[in-house]
Image 1: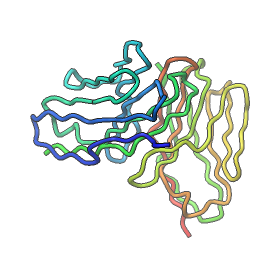
Image 2 (image 1 turned 45 degrees about the vertical axis):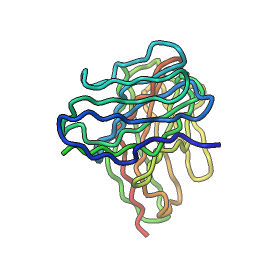
Image 3 (image 1 turned 180 degrees about the horizontal axis):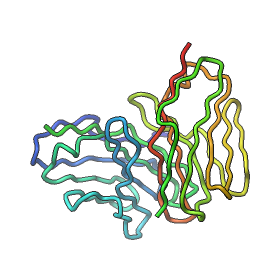
Length: 115
Length: 112
């Protein structure tokens, strides 16, 4: 079946603009995660969703970052008033459920460049 | 919360030699430890994982060992090949609704 997909694959924006990144998880996966990966760095957890439970937003770096998920399907990550330090690859992952031992399947990422 | 440290940050080995990457974690309640491989420009992919009820797991040329007392786990790659060149990430989590905490990654280069 189809894997995790993300769009756009690349996004160039000007400082101060808002951007919206999209993630389509694997069908049937109830858990969805967003990570940020700066150039040459590790995976920085941002937020995750599990079914209808309240999302864990503990990794969001500022109130400019927000995310929504419609049921157990698509999720959007919004960054308002983008800054140059927001430049990174934003990775989405999904798993069957949010149990810590579930394999996470990653999407290809959205490469964001803020000029 | 959980903190995962990974060493070394870069590793170069000759083709055919072994490579070892080590991680330590801080939360003794963590009980799931996966390893992900990320090739250049591609998405991370799970290569092996281990749970706290075992001390070692092997899959062909890849093995992972876990020492819960010392709170560290390691990835071992034997008979390395150029296609093993990638960034490897370790991670840890506690069973239940908690996300994975990743190490900062190790860039492995296998020199032919």
